[in-house]
Length: 34
Image (tube, rainbow, N blue to C red; front, side, top):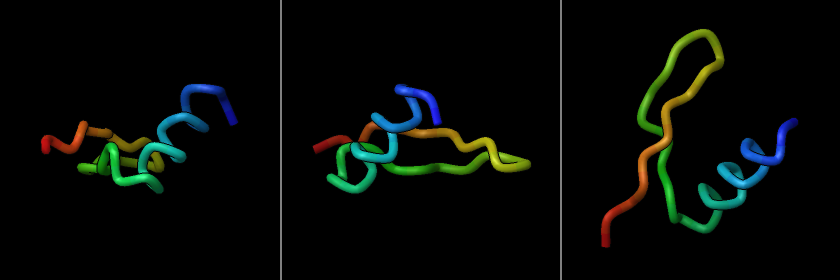
């Protein structure tokens, strides 16, 4: 797992970003606007 992926996963757990889709295991992340 790359550092960027680890950051995205942590941010997702914290609710900072959300997974918005993707294909074949590749996901698109989007910042959650407050």
